[in-house]
Each structure stands twice: as C-alpha cells, then as structure tokens.
Image 1 (tube, rainbow, N blue to C red):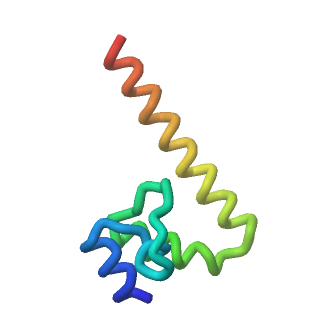
Image 2 (cartoon, helix red, strand yellow):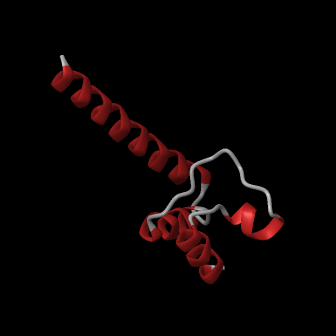
Length: 72
C-alpha cells in the first residue's frame, strides 16, 4: 500500500486512478506524513476520530478568519 501511495504521489494521481483507471474529482493528498497519520486514525474509535476532526475544523476556521482579517 505504501508503494502505491508513493507512486500515486509521484505521478500526482489518485489511488483510484492507479487501481481502476478513473480519476476522481477530489484533490489528491501529497503530504505523506498526513496520509500516514490519517491511516492511523482509521484505527481510532469513533469518539477519538471525531475529536481529531473537530480540531482540524477549528484550525481551518482559524486560518480562514486570519486570512479575512488580513485582507480587510
């Protein structure tokens, strides 16, 4: 799996494209550290996954607010 992820990253295509030949509309994730962390999160229980998702959402909102403040 790691080799497929690396190949997909090097070719800048999704795993779907490598496996079935169909490109999805989603943007592929290129940061291998993020991919590995998300793979590990798959093994967490639902409550812990939800906590991580909320943390990520909060960071995204923070960044958007900071960007809006700097523009205006």
